[in-house]
Amino acid sequence: MTVMAERVSSQMSVDMFERIAEFAAREDETVGFEFIDGRIGVKKVTNGNHDEITMWLVFRCKHARPELTLYPDRGLKVGAYRNGRARPDGVLAPAGHFTGKGNWADPQGVLMTVEITSHDSDTHSRDRVEKPRAYAEAGIPVYLLIDRENLSILVHSNPDLEVGYRDVHVARLGGTITLPDPVGIELDTEDLKPYAD
Image 1: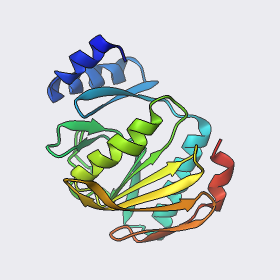
Image 2 (image 1 turned 90 degrees about the vertical axis):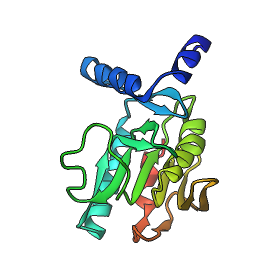
Image 3 (image 1 turned 135 degrees about the vertical axis):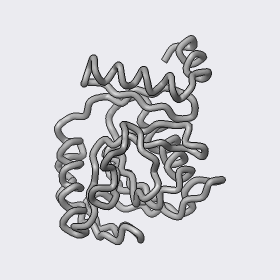
Image 4 (image 1 turned 120 degrees about the vertical axis):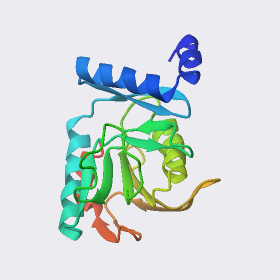
């Protein structure tokens, strides 16, 4: 992002961002926008391996907890004052939770957000720093990061408005990991290893 674009986005209102994101979605489905910490970020189209991980997780969650649904690419209002807008790779909530909601839903009732790292220049700051803080500030109980670059799974829990998530559990990709309450699902991630590209 250029210095001029950073200056413009730091002064941008949430309403203006939503109008830009809505226009972009109508004009070009290969790119999406997020608005975190007062800055616009570009969410690129995912590759096939990324999609396979998402669908693997959708099926695992539905099998373990049929009353829940993992919604891919669901827009959420995030941050301490809900002034951010994020599109997690997955949002776990009760089935039917987003019925009648707009493009950007309040995170109340969301049990978990999921991000799967991509191979782009801002993955570290976006998925490992900014989004965990924004999701914790929004009070989302669990943040699951599937880190393909580091071949690991990170489970963030115990959100705190001041410091982010207080607990982070890390496991190697291929191991078994338990998603804490209120999710309460155990995942054997051996099947994900071929998609770590």
